[in-house]
Length: 105
Image 1 (cartoon, rainbow, N blue to C red):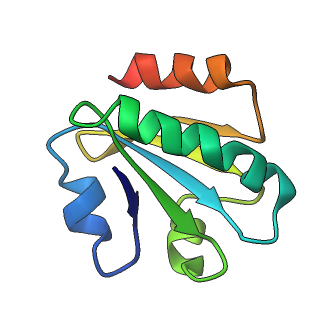
Image 2: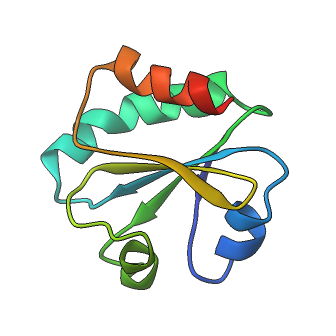
């Protein structure tokens, strides 16, 4: 299942999550973001119960984007036990993103 994170649910859903979290920072108008979207959705199903995977729309959640220093999209932030352990930016091959997820899971 893919989540949508916002400022209201962020602490509970992400920072206090009992399992690791991957956040996809994106925007609707971003071509590379749209390209990565099916891959992120696929991983959300594949890692269900092991890694919580969700999206943050940078246009709607500017405060969250700023909190993580997001300057380019798509950006993927990996959080475990409330701490950022990895961050990668840009569209990438499926196996590269999967490698970052495997390190997290």
